[in-house]
Amino acid sequence: MNNFDPVNQEHYNGPLSRQLRERLQRFRTDNNATLQDIGNELGLTGSFVGKLLDSKSPANISTKHVARIVQKVEHAEIELGWAPKKGNQTPSKNVPPDLASLMREITRLGYDVSVTLRV
Image 1 (cartoon, rainbow, N blue to C red):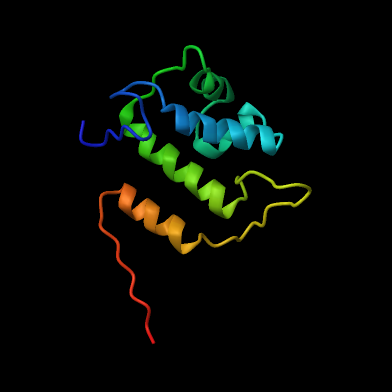
Image 2 (image 1 turned 30 degrees about the horizontal axis):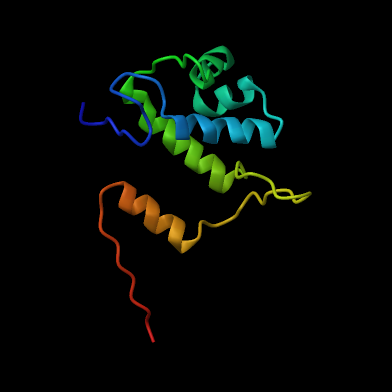
């Protein structure tokens, strides 16, 4: 159970967390992506992605796969423009993450972060 992260999965070998399902669903809605599009990115079938995203009874997934899914989601949000669109803007394909986002992610992984301004 050493790979289990309650931020991303409800319980060991259980469904993805509500927050992670919402991130995937938001991309799907904002970018008119199909379940198969998401499945292709995550290395899953479109039908299984649909079961993972089911709000009433989401499918269970082996905990060993969750870290890979989270990594792909984060990559897509940053590199592929999976972040929600604002107005008529098209997300940039090469948007670098901001410092605050990087620090939050490092903290989420269990590390302490400090930054010192060089002058």
